[in-house]
Image 1 (cartoon, helix red, strand yellow):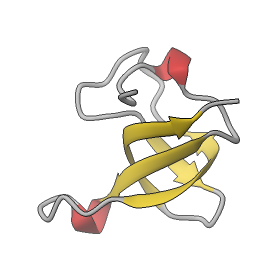
Image 2: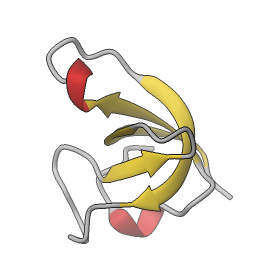
Image 3: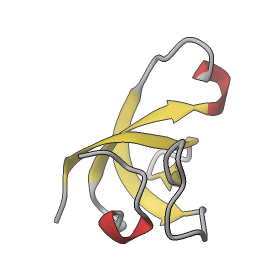
Image 4: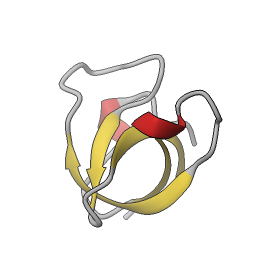
Length: 66
C-alpha cells in the first residue's frame, strides 16, 4: 500500500520511508510511525512522519498496519 493518504497512516504501523537526505537516491528506510507530520489528507510524494527512532521521512510503502 502506498503512503499518500493520511487516513491510511496511524502511529505504530510499519512503513518504508524515504529520508530527506536520501531524496535523490531512492533509498528506503524501515521503521514504525511515531508521529504524523503532514496535515493534508493526501500528499502526492507521501505522508511525512517521524519514526520511533527519531528519523523523519515520507512514506513510500506501508508494510503492516494495525
